[in-house]
Length: 344
Image (cartoon, rainbow, N blue to C red; front, side, top):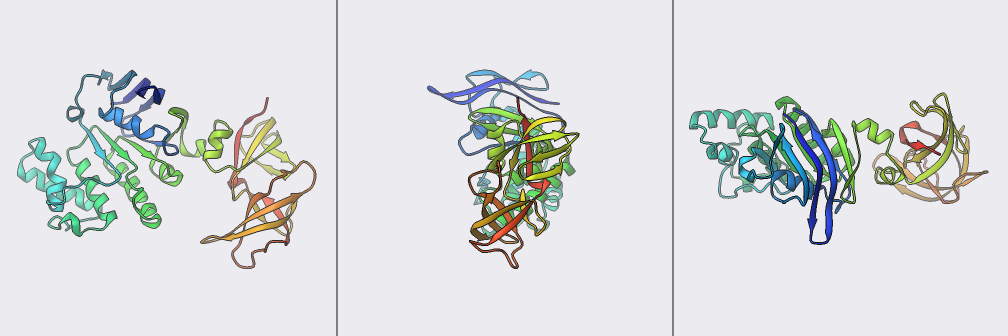
């Protein structure tokens, strides 16, 4: 069973929120719609759910056009940012709600509730009121409730964004394991890179109402479709370079970069593309230092021919990090480099 979107557009008066989107989600696959706020990803998800009416294009499930199918008849599960639980019901009653609507008998409901609460790490929580739970626990209940009726497709709209960073990271890992354990087909909306790459089999990067790139997480991260996509994925500096049998040479040095091939290429540098190294090829002067959890973030003005004229980002160990005014040497780190495409 497959979700297929063809030429899908959604408009609000003269404003095109979603424009000519083609996308598919295969049986058992998790696809993340990744993009900045306002790019149309939530609108696209709401159109799939039946909550927004497309201006053009088709939404098909297993080849069947869903244009005339009401929201509650699509058999899709929905999880939103705030969970939207029933505060007057306990955890078990929340999880069982969808099954009651599908007329599942009491014994089967109870069994399914227990199974799902164990899967989401809340075994024994059935009699608790949802108002007594933490934000992360409430989202786990919302996930269990959405999965309980065994939906054909699970739609998640920024399901973790209301949580703090540490909890969001842990719940993303748990959610990825849960989706794979249950074989759930899912479409996830998020603006968080780490969340998308943790959850998804494929990432669909969306900007300005359009899908700009679709592919496995590693491919999208390593080979952004263009410099605009690369900028959203953290590349702040772009450097022309020359590739020769997957070895890239630029004004910042030489390094092997699998997949770069031969010819003129453009390198996108993320914050960790340059690291302090006493033997580094690149020289510069620190103009700013900021401390992070596990490293120091530097801005460095480079010296040399053909190097970027604006200060570039670099990283250094927290212990003994250089200060503004210090001279430093930097080396390229392939983990921080994206290959944004061959130059013409």
